[in-house]
Length: 158
Image 1 (cartoon, rainbow, N blue to C red):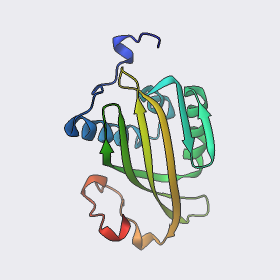
Image 2 (tube, rainbow, N blue to C red):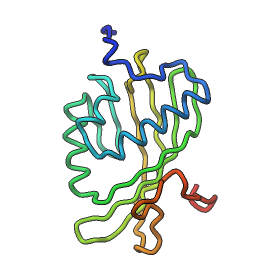
Image 3 (tube, rainbow, N blue to C red):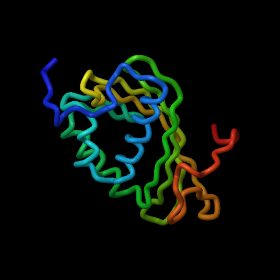
């Protein structure tokens, strides 16, 4: 593995505890909620590998291109991630995000991700499985100025 500079290090570093895994999950959530692919890529190793639904990506250039297209069509994107499980250098999360398409139709995506981290704290592998469900505007959780962390996500949505 190539050595990384301190600037490339993304604490907390593995091995994870429950507390540091929680911090890592919320940091990823906050980063993705910027909807800025150039910022998001900094959380990943240059040779990161992804499976996102049915797409397979490698490296941060492919990730930037993927996220740029994603957020061009997923308007109003807001995401919440919650820790599901963890080990020394792996974290699994549940997530829910909402967006509307170019026609104005709202969706909520439900899913799971599994992450593997390099020693420098950047993500080396990300696998995502998710399903989009159409929702009415009245069913939205993440309306303007709502903190995604305060929304009560009931057992119905697990």
